[in-house]
Amino acid sequence: MNTPNPAQIAALFDVDLIGLITSFICLLTAFVLGTLIGLERQWRQRTAGLRTNVLVAVGAAAFADLGLRVAGVDGGVRVISYVVSGIGFLGAGVIMKEGTHVRGLNTAATLWASAAVGSFAGARKPAEAVLVAIFVLAGNTLLRPLVDAVNRRPMDPGETEALYRVHVVCPSGGVSQARDLLFEELETHHYPIRDIETLADSEAHVELAAILVPSTANPADLDAITAHIARHEGIISATWTVSATN
Image 1 (cartoon, helix red, strand yellow):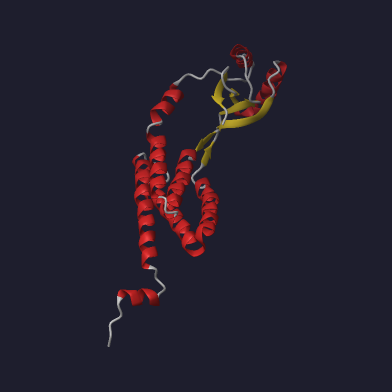
Image 2 (cartoon, helix red, strand yellow; image 1 turned 180 degrees about the vertical axis):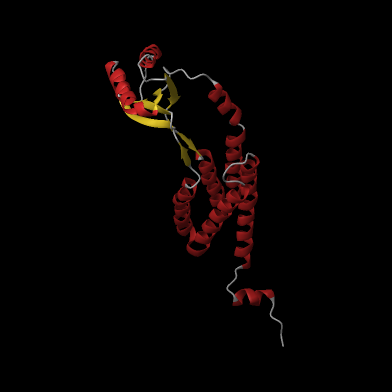
């Protein structure tokens, strides 16, 4: 009885050894580069860390490789386009909104970039995959000091469209009066209100915040408005804050 050789086994299961080796190299490239990107994310304790970025890169490489092997260049292009759109759903899952702040945008962008690295690797472009990975790592590391420096810079309300809030703390039984007072004072000074939200609510006190329509405002006007509101009976305190719009 003759023992089948590797070539006969490969033919029996329709295995293309050359293609299999090529796929291995593509997936290995995506795995290594995804590991480098994910390691930086894991080190900083981000939501999507090492394993997530590796799986995204390897998955993108696998789909791109499959499209190329099954349907040629046209198939690979179609599969990559689906990867680009599909990874958006995964990225949306790590974006969280907490009040006026949005977290996870950089993590979602990193996942998208990991998919790009994997797509290049799966498309038989390892040099380009390495290049994209280098830029992704540079964006997440080298630009961090610059971002921190900009964030520490005092914000000049005149330089950016800002979101102003007028805060009022009142007894729990005086909420309606405080709302009416906010509308009256701000409308008198021609500052339209977009909304009034409740920031804190306890048995004793309630904190309201009137959100102004995004625009520039005169700090002296807001100082005068809050000082006038604070003098009203039933108002415990009145202040204003400003933050950059999203």
